[in-house]
Image (cartoon, rainbow, N blue to C red; front, side, top):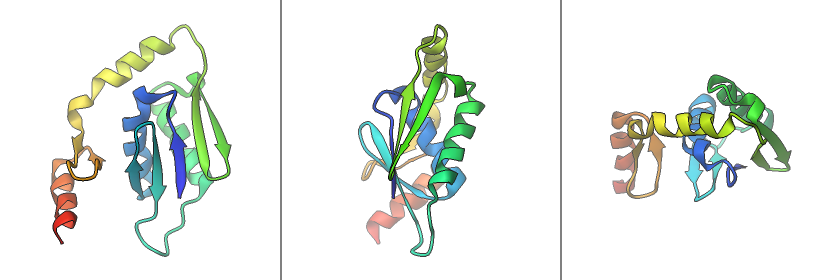
Length: 127
């Protein structure tokens, strides 16, 4: 399990969670200001280097790579903002773009961009 601490970067937390979880095919467990990545299968291994690469890819895809520093510590990764003149504006654009495109499980808080995936996910709560 690897925990990504987004306590100082809440504006990108939800989109980062979806991107990293989809990229690595892992199960994210959402908390208020961070999320934990866990393996779906017992034999699956989550490499910290893969997680770091996925985070960097996400930041590059939204043109925010130079606005954040990524600090790995044991099984935790902290994403800390760097002060910059355009950062607030970029975060507001990112935070406002796709809020309606996420579907959340009312039972556990699981997030997905796909309504069909949410319906399938909800079925596990009734098995």
